[in-house]
Image 1 (cartoon, rainbow, N blue to C red):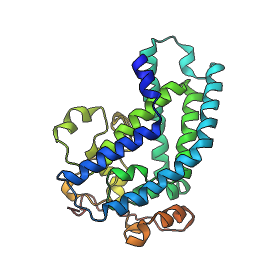
Image 2: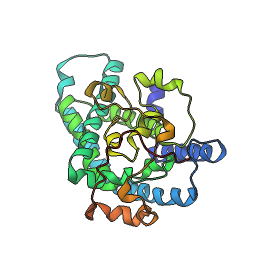
Image 3: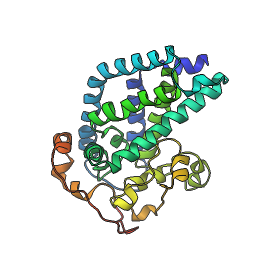
Length: 278
């Protein structure tokens, strides 16, 4: 537990910097499933999202932590009704944060107002490790950030388990989004329980039939349990959204203002006929 405390005591920004440096470097020196151009420019555009998020989070994270600690001090949540070993409670708490994120993520695809913000993440037609940063800050703070408070209010999860959840989330996010070749056996082993890159690549497929699937971030069992799990061959994948499939709509400035612009969503359900991007 001491080691875990030290690990979670590291500034998350340092962890993010280390992960993007590692995965982005690997994408430049290794054979990749998709060949993309202008990678440095693409990285710069996506990093701008992270800079805005860090600035805004200075205020919101303090509020989030204060609220969850108040809930814990008043023993609010289902986990306070039973006594569990610390390790078991920690694992359950992380799973509950992930479960709440699954349903919120699913909601961002189905509720038009939320989709306006979430489509920023799906707009990337050349997904790589830097796509992890391409989230509209308002979505991350007000939608998913509020989701953490809801999780704590319902289940009694604490700040420590939330920190562990985010540490694991960062690892999975870079692992899932990176433009790297991974062994296929991952899908039939670890992929029975956890989200693998091939699962999340389906979620970024351009056709809405596939975009609206595989919502989980860490545990793929949520998609398997709730009927939203789909797979398709890697060679048939085409990333992004049709309504953002031009270079001018890939810029940071356009994407930041895009939730406030009326853009008709692609309703294509042409199953499994995406184009190879390699």
